[in-house]
Length: 181
Image (tube, rainbow, N blue to C red; front, top):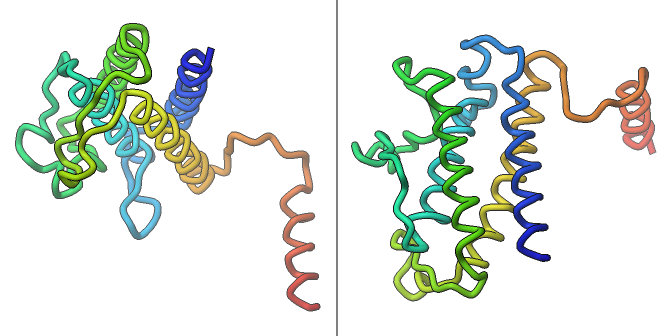
């Protein structure tokens, strides 16, 4: 039961991440929207590596595809957080869906207490379990889904929440009132 709950929460967050791209052009899905350079399609690309790394390679299930940013080492310079002009949106989204399938196969095949090892963690912490890594990926994907909600709202005002008309003004008014007290 807990495994299915984790898988469902993961899928809900995955769907939320991809819905943030809906209706946007190439520029808007790629452009940095905050000083850190975070962008919508870059977050999708990052999550490809998160799933294939933690829930594939680290649990003895090598990724079914090679990731160019891992192969060329640019991942260590945040090469997984932005998308090259030669990497299409469809390419990145297809990679993400490939990662989903691979992760879902891991979830179906492995018990939560299956041993895992994360080679990029400090040696004293490398040994862990599939359940720990699955929980970590669910949390990280949910966190990035929230980032995507905010980034999308910065692009065109669309957010995941469907607040009633006047909601923004209500919240702004309360903030101003609090600042006066």
